[in-house]
Image (cartoon, rainbow, N blue to C red; front, side):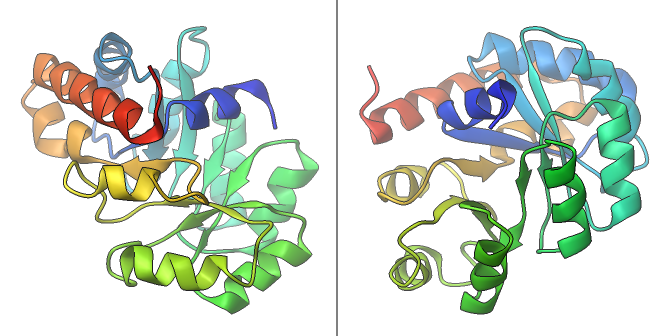
Length: 213
């Protein structure tokens, strides 16, 4: 996997961000860097996504990916904007093939054995478990992990400080996606100092859960 994505995974938390204004991207990235979490998944849930990714793609101190990539057109826009990884809520074979052919790390969402089997057939070994809490959380992840010992997961959906340690303590969890430190309201109100503080707290919690110093 390319270095940027490995760096994001090593941080154990991938902030999932919906930006309404691309102009907020730089200040958001500065806050995440200050909090010790220099990465983000910018979701294609808003019209500003591509411009926001483009604004951050050239930063040497930050890893930016594209999230909520639903189809081939969005995957192409993500790549053209400079996204260093692509995340989808589900497994779209066209998106996966496009990313694999282009050398772009891709993290499709799965929540059933059939999803995971298809991902395995496509050569993937790292998957997004989504929506994690709504689909049964760690109990379901345990059940899914058993028949697929080659797979690692990035649970996303309902992850917050109350359950982050439990998820990161699971041997098959590579990292978690979360949005509590980058909520839309905080960004809209310009509360970037609060984002930096919440990020620092999240990083400390993740370090403790994963046994990092």
